[in-house]
Image 1 (cartoon, rainbow, N blue to C red):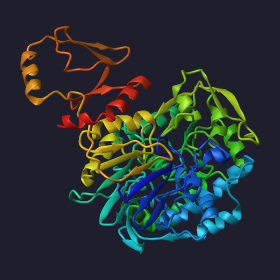
Image 2 (image 1 turned 60 degrees about the vertical axis):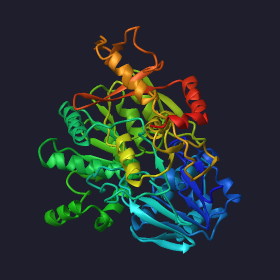
Image 3 (image 1 turned 45 degrees about the horizontal axis):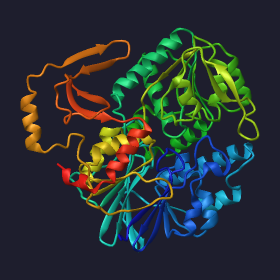
Length: 553
């Protein structure tokens, strides 16, 4: 048995409560301890009890989003002398996120930790610079920029002559407020990669085009006399959107209207102002040249209290509100949504990931005029107070994600050429889809929370769905080279339907639905798509058959 093992406590087959334990030869290393947005009490926590059997020697915090940091004081309650390593920016932002978490969970009547526990946790933070090798615990690790968020890090672990790369939440696209993830210039082989897979089933559209469409949609609403609500993650996303809107207003693409920041976005944006030296060089240079603050300038306004918020809600003046939470779970954003969604002249634009049970996801699935359940005015002491709200306003999604899509993730994994790949931080479809692109070249694991997995390449591989022997496949291609295939495009459903003749050899295509990937007008890949549980169970059974390893191309 390998000395290196992976144990996911949460955030394995879900997005939320991320917490991962690495059992290394020299000791255990814990990465992250997050909470589940929208859940309360113990339901919000990862399986921290498993640490009793595997106490960590050290801990790393990859970044300060709630789903990675929210349960940190619960860990420190059990391990009060644990050192928590992170970047300087993450340490500073974590203070604000934990403070907000304490406030919200206390209001819900089920606080996850006390103010004293939070203070003791912040005292355990040990900031380290990127690219600095730390070897104080026998094993060694190095933090690398992962994009995604200011201060976010990927982790390279070294133990017993072997290496494991943990992507953390990662983005390969630069934004105004964070540079893209760092990658080695040449292929740098490691034994295993543990990768997030949030958008493992998605090829995201061009960010530049999405920003252009986003600005256009906002302009249409404002020129029509409406108000725009942008529920946003307070960390990173709100600051990026502020930059986008400021630039568009200065260039005349948008009318100059108030940009109100409400909820946790206020304190985070002020913290970003104080961390200007840690922000991208282009943003620093622009602030120096303009001699203006990078965010809190122009028409940007911090909503100070309930009285000011009520004034904004009562006003019919065109305006943009950027408010937390990004999934409409809680915070200020549901208050604006309740007031503005029923009116057709307004708009609500979604700009980030929405988990499967979030009000934001439900809103996107609605027909115009339907009702969505949003947190009630008083929130409810038990956190369960919801009320129906009619949605007649314009609701649209724009992909300004801080996560790499499938192509970006596959490119990063290829740069590290691992034998073993473990996929985490994704829903079932995203992980399964991404695994389909990896499992002919790598030993891929899709663990559940609490499952101990060796970080060693077993040599097990799956072939592609067309795993026919090469000579036979060539013969079939020749035989069917002149076969007529009927193709029909359905304009209503946007489906391309291909009718294969009965004479076509069934060995070429299995039963089921297929997806086509089109790149620059040409079909680049055909992939069997499996949705239902029965099909996925068949895939799991196929994974368990050792003879499939012989079909590896």
